[in-house]
Image (cartoon, rainbow, N blue to C red; front, side):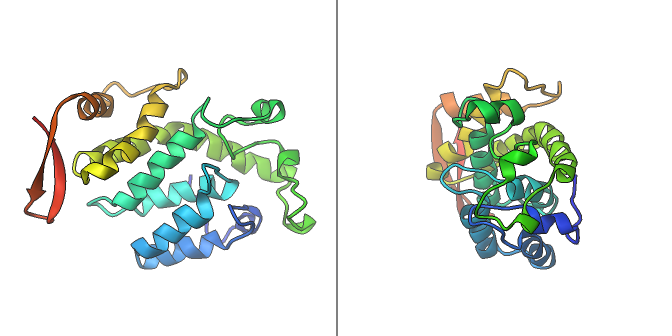
Length: 214
């Protein structure tokens, strides 16, 4: 579910530090992929101290769409962090939030977004909730794709990155509402990464350390 980058709703989708022009950052990434720009977007804007925001969920469809074919470790680490922090039971929600949020940071009740640090003309409205509900539905399905990316990256990542890449998929598998396609192989591959002895060897093609199960 790609929210058009020209949609005025972006001007009301807040992130870790309020109203940041996330749409322009995504447009720039579409024109020129930059890991440095990604790091700032991921860890300074869309994710902060295990918190997620409406702008996070609106950006995720674009971030999946723009991923390079050969993968991106920084993106996989971000997807894992999002899966973990959005997982039921991970975040501590108030009783009010539990009534209006399936995922941490994505309430579909307009009153939950009426923050006093946002100017009233820039606050999300009841009419905007239809888009947030669509993002909620999209994210519920897209989590499987994100977990697959994390596990695939973990199979070739430096050893120190692997636990961080697997945390999100592990939390996702704890979700009793999760429905996996019959051909999903990533849960079994995740378990092999967790339980089987591993050795590191140099990947001649990329000059990176890759994990292989013995």
